[in-house]
Image (cartoon, rainbow, N blue to C red; front, side, top):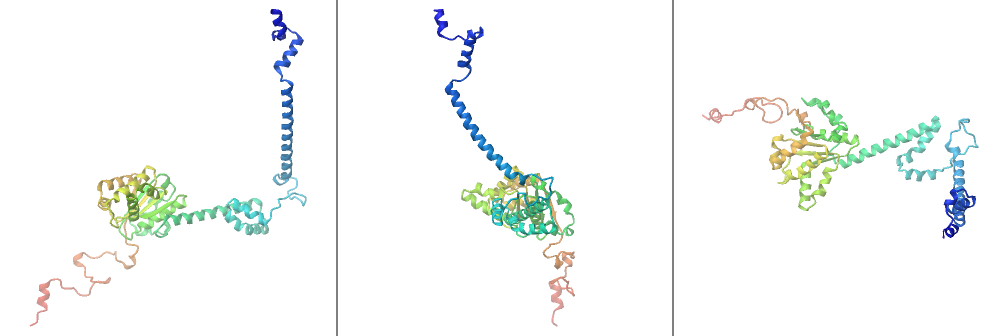
Length: 369
């Protein structure tokens, strides 16, 4: 039995005993593949090798073909007529510019190329000018688009504001509101003053400076905001309409307290202020009412206090005084005598003669004898 078993099965133990025949047999059967598998592997290797050789040859041909255009020729900085150069016609450049959305470059490149040839520009200078012109054009286009979308009532800049008419306000006090930190840190501002003091001018100028710093701005009046959100709430679209006033980086709410609002004015305004406060989105308010009267304006003392608390947590209250910018040419704001001493009836000058104010004296002087 043991002899048969040993004869029928090739024991791996014999290989360790040094029998060369068995050792060869075990290596043939156990270590390497059979002939069929070997043939398949060889055929696969040949086909793969042929495929890779074809791809390598094509890649080498492409590299060889494009290499003269990509590599620098240090030996001959001025290549001769035998050097290979890209052949691109004017018609082939147009779709390339369009595909890369280089609209401005497509319009100016020919003039710039002619100028570069006349003035012997380097390739780097030519490319630098094209890129600078494209970036400047896109920046200007963005400014125009964002300014239109901001819905400013008029266009004013901070340089146009006359700070000499203000007794306490100076441009240096608004420096933190003219930089990008105004938006990134979520600061807010309340501009208070009588009519004509330049509140809306400053709000528009700060909003436009935010656009120049890369952010977007929306300007609206308090009456429009309250009316739009009130109507949206009645139609069940309040959350959808809130996005109009919460999405922009900067929100300017003009003329708080100028008009009469509906009973839910404080409610809808609180939605906007609270949403923007939680996300550190800056707000600018202009008003002709002191903060103590906002409760009466919005018909809710508690909500008005909550609104002001959120606005002024990271904000500032600025009082604008001085004469009205609209009527200062009339000198209406100059110092006048007290009410009892005023003699002026109309115009800007006082009357020449004192006017009677007591009825009895007037009747006695005018008696007819």
